[in-house]
Image (cartoon, rainbow over all chains, first blue to last red):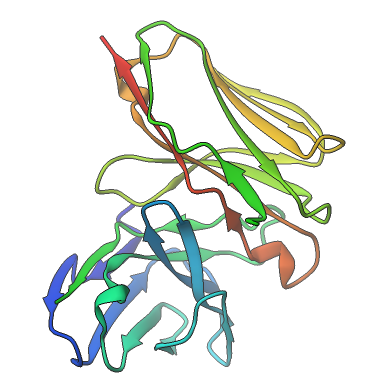
Amino acid sequence: DADVTQTPRNRITKTGKRIMLECSQTKGHDRMYWYRQDPGLGLQLIYYSFDVKDINKGEISDGYSVSRQAQAKFSLSLESAIPNQTALYFCATSDSRRATDTQYFGPGTRLTVL
Amino acid sequence: QKEVEQDPGPLSVPEGAIVSLNCTYSNSAFQYFMWYRQYSRKGPELLMYTYSSGNKEDGRFTAQVDKSSKYISLFIRDSQPSDSATYLCAMSGTGETSGSRLTFGEGTQLTVNP
């Protein structure tokens, strides 16, 4: 969905490096999320933000941090990458004004930590 | 024990077959039930959405929720090769915070053979 974009789409890095994944959306949604997807585990919530000043930890926030620079931008950082953070990362958005609060996902970032 | 259990498959069927995908869950607070479809190298996209128990039909797709058994299903009639994807169930509870936090199954990989 072009309304939610993620950069980079692929990244290979080394253990100990700092990495930032970026997410931008043009949907006008107030809520944004970061997930990671691993085989056998499905999608797990890392962090979520209900607005620019509201950031919350998800199920697996250790080793990650986030920044909500604007309503449309939500970045995920790995301060010191480790190999078990190798995964597919997805950003998602939702609109709190809608009854269903459906989440819309970006195309994903494939991260490999060597 | 996972809150949401989903058989990862893989599931392979001939074109035209009826496909049944299922999830079980343990959290009785879940009220909203969704099915997402994820094509290879893409982000998940919402396919079906159901609130509480009952059936919902959309073209070749039918979603069923049985809250008494904590069991949800997605049926695909007249399956097509273009239905080949990973199907993820997702669910959430009610309330400002829990309503936006989705819990996903690990996904079932489906292949429809021509």
